[in-house]
Length: 185
Image (cartoon, rainbow, N blue to C red; front, side, top):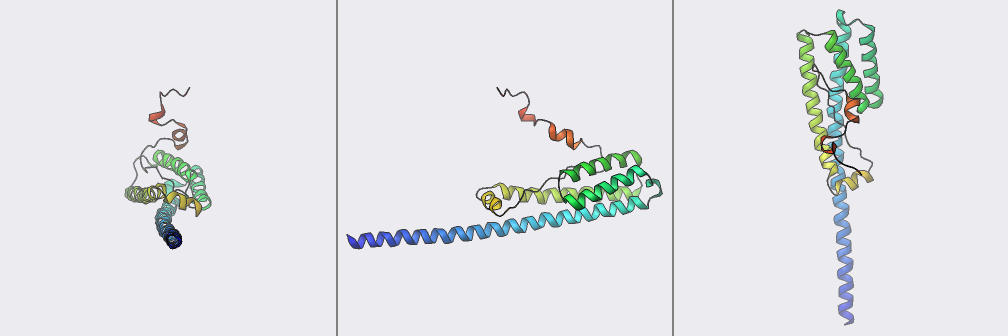
């Protein structure tokens, strides 16, 4: 009987040790994958941000673009992109700049059309990478490890250049479709 108790104790200790080692490697694996996906989001944002800087240079060089309002909006956009990196403030400033550009250039030339297409493609690519990261971030047990390691969700960039967009401030204050007409009392 004493021998059985000793074997049972060894069995419990070995299960505990194997479980601890398994959890450690699972955490390492998830943390590594989160790090990799987060780097992909950062790299994708950098490529997109570089194209936005290229846009600023192109607009600055155009003689039609010499307007104080456009320069002010470009400076605000650049400042927000540098200081806030990727956040809702970037979306708001880009929304304002896109809206102004649509008024200023109702029929854009080839260089601006190419730029708009390129920005929209990079925006779609960034959102795809951000979605992949956010989905991985949100699954169990990944979100526990992500929170522990201070990872943050990536934001989505939902401005489509060259087209009329919904105001992001108003959009953020609206109730989602599923919540409308729901009695909360």
